[in-house]
Image 1 (cartoon, rainbow, N blue to C red):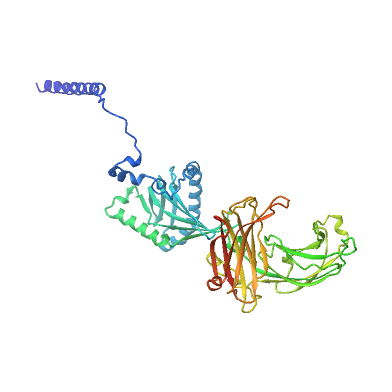
Image 2: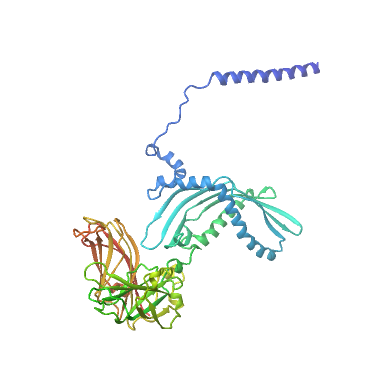
Length: 538
């Protein structure tokens, strides 16, 4: 009986299970609820407060904060480039870590530390938004919001005393709000000299750590301790205002800051060719340095003279004595029409010995083409005396922060006086009635200087520097800065018009040493100009 009851019980269990599965499938198939609706999609403004609080952490910053910009194109770029960036970043990390590990392991009697596997996974970081700041300094400030829930696989093997232990990092999550500053902005690629990185708040870091297959983060208390330790260590190093500086270019070379002064004395010219119909010429000399945006300097005109003597002195700022050269052009002045060229020559600055005057007699040529047969004709000679005086080492800024401070004037500056430096950066919203080809005219103590003109631009940028050598501080002086527009077409109708002007009191510059401000232009509707002024003394 016992055997028969066991068999019947087993059969009953099998039949019951089978019957239950059939009935359950029938009920699931034919008695599904009919009141299921698609979820209703509503705008954020129509959501209740409880729903908004639940959704808020997942809403991108560019939605919550209007000063954050949407940067989906960066996320798309990272998505496509991530497989290649992964390999490049990991290779760079290995190369950086290798010498550090080799230097440190002897202190702890470890035989070797190796990366058995190093990959950042298939999931790239995402930018939730980016804020960009605009300042009057030569810098670009960005604050991106970065989230990375990655799947990296980092396995480090440690060998010591004949044993081997492996540590694995998995499931990494990093939420950070860094500030990235590119400064100074320079005219050499990649157009910035340094990268400064700092954190605006403590980062969120979460990861799994396995030792010989066991999850260390599951140990009670260890997870929170490690998280707080990482946050505090990173914050101590990089939390704003502390920064990580990554040098890219030498600022002094990239900005081509002044490194010396060239003293030029135009002495005389001899045996010049006749250009006028009456058998004479009216010569004068124009001189400038190559790679320099400043206007050429000119001597006076000597009327009807083929052997003129000038004995006139000029000081020119030098930025790169290895590549720059002094260009000297002799012209015949004409009352009407274009002035005739009489000859020219070039003196490379690298041929000059610093601090030593050099008297040179230069043959005037038609051009600097050595194969031009017309250069064999005699056009006369020009006598000049050149002296290159480099600045002292402590007078040249080494870093960007030093470059923002005012440099000392060269030793050749007058005693009791100094050097007034005027840097014309840019203008905004300048517009003429008939044309807008703006340039800046600077007038100080009867001396006039001009920037180049920018064609058809309401927001021109010049970045040009002008220097005035003064015998005394300009405490009671004013600097007249005027923005004008010059017609790009030949004609007498509206050849020039004023777009606005400003008179700057220089007493503040003498007291503060440096001023960098935007000024509203007088006689302009919305025009502004950014001028930087420096007063340099010995």
